[in-house]
Amino acid sequence: MKMDPSDEQRSASSSSHVFVHNPHLDTMKDDILYHFSLGTKTHDLPAMFGDVKFVCVGGSPWRMKSFIEYIAAELAMEDPKSDYPNICAGTDRYAMYKVGPVLSVSHGMGIPSIAIMLHELIKLLHHARCTDVTIIRIGTSGGIGLEPGTVVVTKQSVDATFLPKFEQVILGKTVVRNTDLDRSLAEELLQCSKELNQFETVIGNTMCTLDFYEGQARLDGAFCAYTEKDKQDYLNRAREAGVCNIEMESSVFAAMCKLSGLRAAVVCVTLLDRLKGDQLSSSHDVLHNYQQRPQILVGSYIKKQLKAKLQRS
Image (cartoon, rainbow, N blue to C red; front, side, top):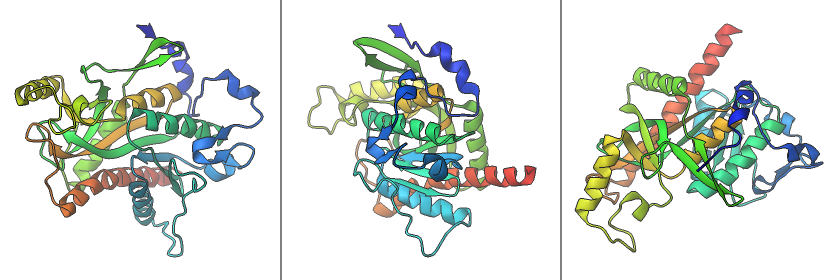
């Protein structure tokens, strides 16, 4: 396996600026962020986004609009006349909302979808000359041996063989990238949860898969060539490897954030215990309550950070 050629560049990402390592960008007169319907020539990106300090990303456009409405109320920035317009209304690929220093962006489902979004988001933050940015993925997941509703803050993203790596084929060669996330940020989020005292939160490894069904050892897909025992054996091996939950975006999210110098975390609520089943049987109201927990935790963290910044200034 070929190791990531950008490893030697990581020291540059320690600065407070968002780091891009692509010399071709310097030769471009206009960088079109196609899937955001934004561009460096058509939009004043520093004026629009230069004050961004927190970026929250999640799969669903509806969920990310709900988050920006929630955070606006939490930060007392709510405008009763505002409907929080979608900044990316010129495209149907992703949705983006902003209030104050907080940006909320949808990323779709799975590694390819979030990777495309992250390329353009990282360039957006770079072109906007943002500094000291923290990015957090909020979402849902399947738990392993946890009570449904437990929030997992990812320590390390692992692949379906329980190894902490993200692999991508570039120019026909396999590139392996590191999937570590910011440990201190994870601990700060855990402390916030303790202060909230509203729901159980743990730090643990998250398994990132390429598929929702067979890739996660489900028995209810269109195809399945393994037994219940095979499934249980696999999930228990994952549990022994420190895996607390399973989702489909954390590995590339961790890898790309690390390369760009973004302080990053993944916060996902578990909707079910996969050791006990594959399908969601909880009521709509219960699931809705669960899905609000990551945004409550991240909202509390952002509010705490902004308050501390005001006290220091």
